[in-house]
Image (cartoon, rainbow, N blue to C red):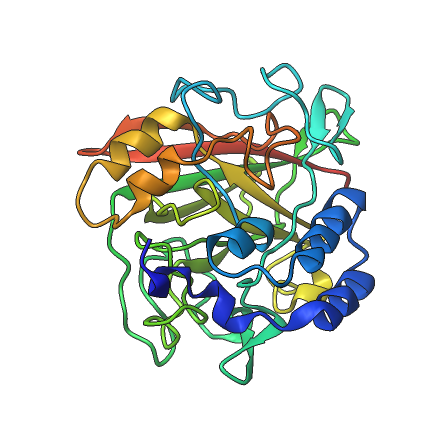
Amino acid sequence: MHHDHDAPHDHDQGLAHDLARLHRQSFDRRVALRWLLGAGTASLTGAGALALVGCGGGGSASDASSSSSSSGSSGSSGSTGSGSTTTSGCSVIPSETEGPYPGDGSNTANGSVANVLALSGVVRSDIRSSIATASGVATGVPLQVIIELVNTNASCADLSGYAIYLWHCDALGRYSMYSSGVTGENYLRGVQATASDGTATFQTIYPGCYSGRVPHIHFEVYRSTTTATNWNNKLRTSQLCFPSDSNTAVYATSGYGNSAANNNAISLTTDGIFSDGYSTQLATVTGSVSAGYVARLKVGISA
Protein backbone atom coordinates (compact mmCIF):
# COMPACT_ATOMS: atom_id res chain seq x y z
CA MET A 1 0.00 0.00 0.00
CA HIS A 2 1.21 3.50 -0.75
CA HIS A 3 2.91 5.27 2.11
CA ASP A 4 0.11 7.80 2.59
CA HIS A 5 -2.32 4.93 3.16
CA ASP A 6 -0.19 3.76 6.07
CA ALA A 7 -0.28 7.21 7.67
CA PRO A 8 -0.73 5.65 11.16
CA HIS A 9 2.99 6.03 11.80
CA ASP A 10 2.83 9.81 11.49
CA HIS A 11 1.14 9.92 14.89
CA ASP A 12 3.20 7.47 16.95
CA GLN A 13 3.78 9.14 20.35
CA GLY A 14 6.37 6.80 21.76
CA LEU A 15 6.86 4.25 24.53
CA ALA A 16 6.21 6.60 27.46
CA HIS A 17 2.85 7.65 26.03
CA ASP A 18 1.81 4.06 25.30
CA LEU A 19 2.72 2.84 28.79
CA ALA A 20 0.90 5.72 30.45
CA ARG A 21 -2.27 4.93 28.51
CA LEU A 22 -1.85 1.27 29.24
CA HIS A 23 -1.80 2.00 32.97
CA ARG A 24 -4.79 4.29 33.11
CA GLN A 25 -7.04 2.18 30.88
CA SER A 26 -6.34 -1.00 32.87
CA PHE A 27 -6.26 -3.22 29.80
CA ASP A 28 -6.62 -6.93 30.42
CA ARG A 29 -3.67 -9.27 30.05
CA ARG A 30 -4.27 -9.86 26.36
CA VAL A 31 -4.28 -6.18 25.42
CA ALA A 32 -1.40 -5.31 27.76
CA LEU A 33 0.85 -7.91 26.14
CA ARG A 34 0.15 -6.48 22.70
CA TRP A 35 0.94 -2.93 23.78
CA LEU A 36 4.19 -4.03 25.38
CA LEU A 37 5.08 -5.97 22.25
CA GLY A 38 4.45 -2.88 20.14
CA ALA A 39 6.54 -0.75 22.49
CA GLY A 40 9.41 -3.20 22.42
CA THR A 41 9.62 -2.83 18.65
CA ALA A 42 9.08 0.92 18.55
CA SER A 43 12.07 1.31 16.25
CA LEU A 44 10.17 -0.44 13.45
CA THR A 45 8.66 1.69 10.70
CA GLY A 46 6.21 1.03 7.90
CA ALA A 47 4.15 -2.13 7.74
CA GLY A 48 6.03 -3.85 10.55
CA ALA A 49 5.09 -1.26 13.14
CA LEU A 50 1.53 -1.05 11.83
CA ALA A 51 1.10 -4.77 12.27
CA LEU A 52 1.81 -4.41 15.97
CA VAL A 53 -0.34 -1.41 16.83
CA GLY A 54 -2.98 -1.17 14.11
CA CYS A 55 -6.24 -2.93 13.55
CA GLY A 56 -7.06 -6.03 11.60
CA GLY A 57 -9.26 -8.02 9.22
CA GLY A 58 -9.23 -10.38 6.23
CA GLY A 59 -7.83 -13.88 6.43
CA SER A 60 -6.96 -16.70 4.06
CA ALA A 61 -9.30 -19.44 2.92
CA SER A 62 -7.93 -21.71 5.61
CA ASP A 63 -9.03 -19.23 8.26
CA ALA A 64 -12.64 -18.75 7.28
CA SER A 65 -13.67 -20.20 3.94
CA SER A 66 -17.38 -19.45 4.04
CA SER A 67 -19.23 -16.14 4.11
CA SER A 68 -21.83 -17.85 6.28
CA SER A 69 -19.23 -18.38 9.01
CA SER A 70 -20.42 -18.42 12.61
CA SER A 71 -20.72 -15.08 14.33
CA GLY A 72 -18.92 -16.44 17.35
CA SER A 73 -21.28 -18.05 19.83
CA SER A 74 -19.82 -20.65 22.16
CA GLY A 75 -20.59 -23.34 19.63
CA SER A 76 -18.75 -21.72 16.72
CA SER A 77 -15.70 -23.21 15.11
CA GLY A 78 -12.22 -21.90 15.75
CA SER A 79 -10.49 -21.28 19.04
CA THR A 80 -11.77 -18.77 21.55
CA GLY A 81 -9.28 -15.96 22.04
CA SER A 82 -7.66 -15.38 25.38
CA GLY A 83 -9.65 -12.89 27.39
CA SER A 84 -12.93 -14.42 26.23
CA THR A 85 -15.05 -16.01 28.96
CA THR A 86 -17.90 -18.39 28.16
CA THR A 87 -20.96 -18.04 30.41
CA SER A 88 -24.46 -19.51 30.02
CA GLY A 89 -24.05 -20.36 26.35
CA CYS A 90 -22.46 -17.11 25.13
CA SER A 91 -19.02 -15.59 25.49
CA VAL A 92 -17.67 -12.27 26.70
CA ILE A 93 -15.95 -10.82 23.67
CA PRO A 94 -12.19 -10.38 24.15
CA SER A 95 -10.87 -6.90 24.86
CA GLU A 96 -8.62 -5.59 22.09
CA THR A 97 -6.46 -2.54 21.67
CA GLU A 98 -8.33 0.40 20.18
CA GLY A 99 -5.26 1.08 18.04
CA PRO A 100 -3.78 4.50 17.33
CA TYR A 101 -6.87 6.01 15.65
CA PRO A 102 -9.84 5.70 18.02
CA GLY A 103 -11.10 9.28 17.79
CA ASP A 104 -12.69 8.83 21.22
CA GLY A 105 -10.82 11.55 23.12
CA SER A 106 -8.04 9.25 24.34
CA ASN A 107 -5.29 10.71 22.13
CA THR A 108 -4.47 13.59 19.83
CA ALA A 109 -4.30 14.13 16.09
CA ASN A 110 -2.67 17.13 14.45
CA GLY A 111 -2.01 18.74 17.84
CA SER A 112 -5.58 18.55 19.15
CA VAL A 113 -7.56 16.00 21.15
CA ALA A 114 -9.30 13.75 18.64
CA ASN A 115 -12.84 13.16 19.88
CA VAL A 116 -15.57 12.63 17.30
CA LEU A 117 -17.88 11.55 20.14
CA ALA A 118 -18.20 15.19 21.21
CA LEU A 119 -19.56 16.28 17.81
CA SER A 120 -23.22 16.88 17.13
CA GLY A 121 -24.56 14.29 14.71
CA VAL A 122 -22.24 11.45 15.70
CA VAL A 123 -25.25 9.36 16.79
CA ARG A 124 -26.30 8.05 13.38
CA SER A 125 -26.79 4.86 11.44
CA ASP A 126 -25.20 5.87 8.13
CA ILE A 127 -21.54 6.65 8.83
CA ARG A 128 -20.31 7.04 5.25
CA SER A 129 -20.25 10.84 5.34
CA SER A 130 -18.37 13.26 7.58
CA ILE A 131 -20.23 15.45 10.07
CA ALA A 132 -19.98 18.92 11.64
CA THR A 133 -17.78 21.16 9.45
CA ALA A 134 -16.40 18.26 7.37
CA SER A 135 -18.13 17.15 4.18
CA GLY A 136 -16.23 14.19 2.73
CA VAL A 137 -17.97 10.93 1.83
CA ALA A 138 -16.29 7.51 1.92
CA THR A 139 -16.89 5.35 -1.13
CA GLY A 140 -16.69 1.58 -1.49
CA VAL A 141 -18.74 -1.61 -1.58
CA PRO A 142 -21.82 -1.08 0.66
CA LEU A 143 -21.74 -2.88 4.01
CA GLN A 144 -24.35 -3.02 6.74
CA VAL A 145 -22.95 -3.96 10.16
CA ILE A 146 -25.38 -5.37 12.73
CA ILE A 147 -24.03 -5.88 16.25
CA GLU A 148 -26.25 -7.70 18.75
CA LEU A 149 -25.26 -6.93 22.34
CA VAL A 150 -26.08 -9.63 24.90
CA ASN A 151 -25.60 -10.14 28.63
CA THR A 152 -23.45 -13.17 29.47
CA ASN A 153 -24.69 -12.98 33.06
CA ALA A 154 -28.33 -13.41 32.04
CA SER A 155 -28.45 -16.34 29.60
CA CYS A 156 -27.45 -14.15 26.67
CA ALA A 157 -30.39 -11.78 27.09
CA ASP A 158 -30.42 -8.84 24.67
CA LEU A 159 -29.16 -5.56 26.08
CA SER A 160 -31.24 -2.59 24.94
CA GLY A 161 -30.43 1.08 25.50
CA TYR A 162 -26.67 0.56 25.42
CA ALA A 163 -24.52 2.26 22.77
CA ILE A 164 -21.95 1.07 20.25
CA TYR A 165 -19.26 3.40 18.87
CA LEU A 166 -17.95 1.90 15.64
CA TRP A 167 -15.07 3.00 13.40
CA HIS A 168 -12.82 1.64 10.65
CA CYS A 169 -10.53 2.63 7.79
CA ASP A 170 -11.69 3.65 4.32
CA ALA A 171 -11.22 1.69 1.08
CA LEU A 172 -7.61 2.86 0.83
CA GLY A 173 -6.77 1.89 4.41
CA ARG A 174 -6.86 5.44 5.80
CA TYR A 175 -8.39 6.51 9.10
CA SER A 176 -10.29 9.79 9.10
CA MET A 177 -8.98 12.43 11.52
CA TYR A 178 -5.50 10.85 11.52
CA SER A 179 -4.21 9.62 8.14
CA SER A 180 -2.57 11.81 5.51
CA GLY A 181 -5.16 13.10 3.06
CA VAL A 182 -8.16 12.65 5.37
CA THR A 183 -7.14 14.49 8.56
CA GLY A 184 -9.96 16.96 8.00
CA GLU A 185 -12.60 14.24 7.65
CA ASN A 186 -14.42 12.21 10.32
CA TYR A 187 -16.33 9.71 8.19
CA LEU A 188 -16.66 5.99 9.02
CA ARG A 189 -17.22 6.81 12.69
CA GLY A 190 -20.57 6.77 14.46
CA VAL A 191 -22.63 5.80 17.49
CA GLN A 192 -25.86 3.81 17.63
CA ALA A 193 -28.07 2.87 20.58
CA THR A 194 -29.04 -0.79 20.85
CA ALA A 195 -32.72 -1.48 20.15
CA SER A 196 -35.09 -3.70 22.15
CA ASP A 197 -33.55 -6.74 20.43
CA GLY A 198 -30.04 -5.64 21.43
CA THR A 199 -29.00 -4.66 17.92
CA ALA A 200 -27.15 -1.58 16.69
CA THR A 201 -27.09 -1.17 12.91
CA PHE A 202 -24.57 0.81 10.85
CA GLN A 203 -24.59 1.53 7.13
CA THR A 204 -21.02 1.87 5.93
CA ILE A 205 -18.56 0.56 3.33
CA TYR A 206 -16.43 -2.58 3.36
CA PRO A 207 -13.10 -1.52 4.90
CA GLY A 208 -9.88 -1.76 2.95
CA CYS A 209 -6.88 -3.87 3.96
CA TYR A 210 -3.64 -2.08 4.72
CA SER A 211 -0.24 -3.71 5.03
CA GLY A 212 0.34 -5.78 8.17
CA ARG A 213 -3.26 -6.36 9.29
CA VAL A 214 -6.30 -8.26 8.12
CA PRO A 215 -9.51 -6.31 7.36
CA HIS A 216 -11.38 -5.43 10.56
CA ILE A 217 -13.71 -3.02 12.32
CA HIS A 218 -13.23 -1.47 15.77
CA PHE A 219 -15.99 -0.83 18.29
CA GLU A 220 -16.49 0.31 21.87
CA VAL A 221 -19.47 -0.49 24.11
CA TYR A 222 -21.02 2.20 26.32
CA ARG A 223 -23.90 2.10 28.81
CA SER A 224 -25.89 4.63 26.78
CA THR A 225 -25.59 7.28 24.09
CA THR A 226 -25.44 9.81 26.93
CA THR A 227 -22.21 8.31 28.26
CA ALA A 228 -20.76 7.64 24.79
CA THR A 229 -19.01 10.99 24.74
CA ASN A 230 -15.53 10.08 25.96
CA TRP A 231 -13.40 6.93 26.14
CA ASN A 232 -13.30 7.09 29.96
CA ASN A 233 -16.88 5.81 30.03
CA LYS A 234 -16.47 2.77 27.78
CA LEU A 235 -17.30 -0.71 29.06
CA ARG A 236 -15.48 -2.77 26.43
CA THR A 237 -13.27 -2.33 23.37
CA SER A 238 -12.93 -5.00 20.70
CA GLN A 239 -12.66 -5.71 16.97
CA LEU A 240 -14.54 -7.84 14.46
CA CYS A 241 -13.09 -9.63 11.45
CA PHE A 242 -14.40 -11.05 8.17
CA PRO A 243 -14.37 -14.41 6.34
CA SER A 244 -11.92 -14.68 3.48
CA ASP A 245 -14.36 -15.08 0.58
CA SER A 246 -16.01 -11.69 1.04
CA ASN A 247 -12.59 -10.04 1.45
CA THR A 248 -11.40 -11.59 -1.82
CA ALA A 249 -14.54 -10.58 -3.72
CA VAL A 250 -14.47 -6.97 -2.51
CA TYR A 251 -10.77 -6.44 -3.13
CA ALA A 252 -11.13 -7.63 -6.73
CA THR A 253 -13.13 -4.46 -7.43
CA SER A 254 -11.71 -1.03 -8.25
CA GLY A 255 -11.19 1.62 -5.60
CA TYR A 256 -9.49 -0.58 -3.00
CA GLY A 257 -5.89 0.27 -3.84
CA ASN A 258 -3.43 -2.40 -2.68
CA SER A 259 -5.98 -4.19 -0.48
CA ALA A 260 -5.91 -7.42 -2.50
CA ALA A 261 -2.13 -7.80 -2.23
CA ASN A 262 -2.10 -6.79 1.43
CA ASN A 263 -4.89 -9.25 2.23
CA ASN A 264 -3.10 -12.08 0.43
CA ALA A 265 0.02 -11.48 2.52
CA ILE A 266 -1.64 -12.15 5.88
CA SER A 267 -4.26 -14.39 7.49
CA LEU A 268 -6.35 -14.50 10.63
CA THR A 269 -3.93 -17.04 12.09
CA THR A 270 -0.93 -14.75 11.57
CA ASP A 271 -2.62 -11.43 12.36
CA GLY A 272 -1.30 -9.72 15.49
CA ILE A 273 -4.78 -9.34 17.00
CA PHE A 274 -6.64 -12.49 15.96
CA SER A 275 -3.87 -15.11 15.92
CA ASP A 276 -4.75 -16.31 19.43
CA GLY A 277 -8.38 -17.00 18.49
CA TYR A 278 -11.22 -15.22 16.72
CA SER A 279 -14.33 -17.40 17.01
CA THR A 280 -16.25 -14.76 18.98
CA GLN A 281 -15.11 -11.98 16.63
CA LEU A 282 -15.70 -13.49 13.19
CA ALA A 283 -18.76 -11.88 11.64
CA THR A 284 -21.38 -13.76 9.64
CA VAL A 285 -21.32 -12.13 6.22
CA THR A 286 -23.97 -12.46 3.51
CA GLY A 287 -24.54 -10.65 0.22
CA SER A 288 -22.43 -9.80 -2.81
CA VAL A 289 -20.39 -7.01 -4.33
CA SER A 290 -23.30 -5.96 -6.55
CA ALA A 291 -25.98 -6.10 -3.84
CA GLY A 292 -23.80 -5.07 -0.92
CA TYR A 293 -22.94 -7.09 2.17
CA VAL A 294 -24.41 -7.55 5.63
CA ALA A 295 -22.09 -8.47 8.52
CA ARG A 296 -23.61 -9.72 11.79
CA LEU A 297 -21.89 -10.32 15.11
CA LYS A 298 -23.24 -11.26 18.54
CA VAL A 299 -21.21 -9.46 21.20
CA GLY A 300 -21.31 -10.65 24.79
CA ILE A 301 -20.47 -8.47 27.77
CA SER A 302 -20.86 -9.09 31.50
CA ALA A 303 -23.60 -6.63 32.40
